[in-house]
Structures are given as C-alpha cells and as structure tokens.
Image (tube, rainbow, N blue to C red; front, side, top):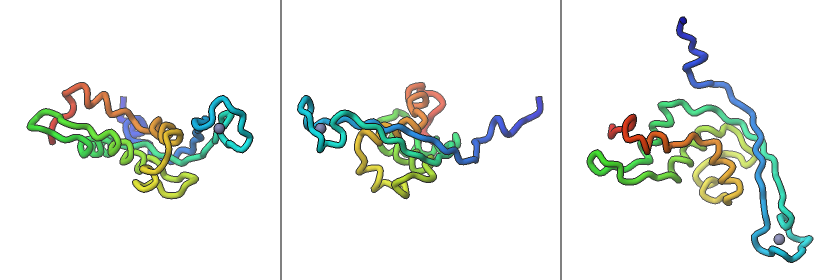
Length: 134
Ligand SMILES: [Zn+2]
C-alpha cells in the first residue's frame, strides 16, 4: 500500500467541540436555597476549538515533566504535563487565552473537564521502555 500521509500525520485542522461542565453545591447541602446557583446541580456547556497534539510535541512536554536520577525516573510533574498539553491543544475558548495564570486558578469542575482532552502520559511512564533519558 502506498504511504498515505492522512493516516500518519497529526490532523492540522481545528476541531470544534462542546464540553459539559457539571456543578454541584458543596456549601449548603440538604437545605433548600434558591439563592444558590449550584444548589440542585447545574450543567454548563462550553464550546472550544482544539487541535491534536503531535507525538513529538507530546514527548517534549513529557520529557520536561520528568526528572531523572541517573537512568531512573524520579518524579513526574503531572500538573506541568497537563497544563502544557492544554496550552497547545486549546486554540480558542470562552475565557480567552489558555495560559498558566488561567489554568492555575480554575476549579475542579472545569479542570476535570479539560483534563479529559489531554492524552494520557501513563503508557510511557509505566512501560519503562520507549522513554529513556534523552
Ligand atoms: Zn447550595
């Protein structure tokens, strides 16, 4: 079969997606409270424009997130990994630029939803091969 770049190259097109963000009241459980926006649960639907992260770019971020002791991996900075991936993946979002300032100030509802956009690093981190000190 001839080489087909459509199969192997990262898709360059920007995708439009919607994410549902669920909010639940954590402050005043069990008591009715009409002034509390999240009291009975609430779902926001946010629209984003995202792009795929190329294999090499993801590896760069992964490498920078790892610290080494000789040939042994000592520490994986998951927060750094997720933030750097999101800054690359998200092209356009309702809040404006996706930067460290934004990402370090959002709550777990939005943070959890955004995290689902990030490719998992665990396959590489756990396998031991495939990732060696560069
Ligand atoms: Zn409430």
